[in-house]
Length: 109
Image 1 (cartoon, rainbow, N blue to C red):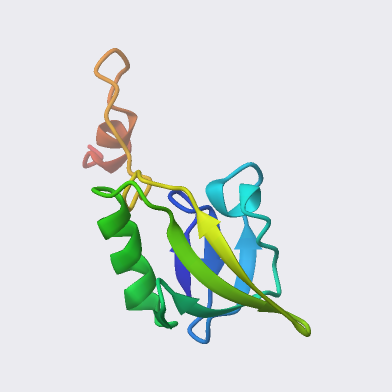
Image 2 (tube, rainbow, N blue to C red):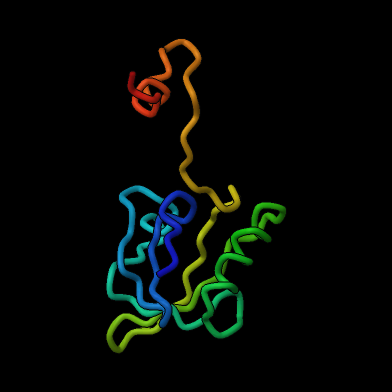
């Protein structure tokens, strides 16, 4: 499973099937829906590495990421206008608050 929820707003399994689409994300605005099958990315057969590479490349380009999808008997080309690169959530320490995890993990007397 390739989770691109924080960049494109989509999760795609190894075979290219769209598993989830985040509301109001670039994929949602391009009208992708769960159950769609991604056939190609930028003119090449789907591969999760190709999709992540296309996202990295789009960060320095102006053209949208081009994805060919199949939804039932319908095949269409979708342009996803996203140029933010790969994004993943991470924790950031808030210096204005006490370090609660330090207290939790401190040795007990």
